[in-house]
Image (cartoon, rainbow, N blue to C red; front, side):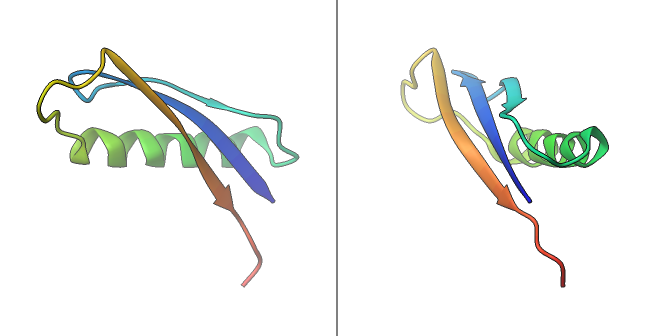
Length: 66
């Protein structure tokens, strides 16, 4: 399955929102990946220069059977 998250970050590098688009995957799977993204972004983002007040983007996760 595929999960697409819309992510919004503020000028301090803090995660404002992580929203998923429609997906056939279970809410528990979606929540797991949402929290993984939140954790990774929180620990790696650092503002440089003069960033815009809000930045947004998407993160796509494709899950396959191994």
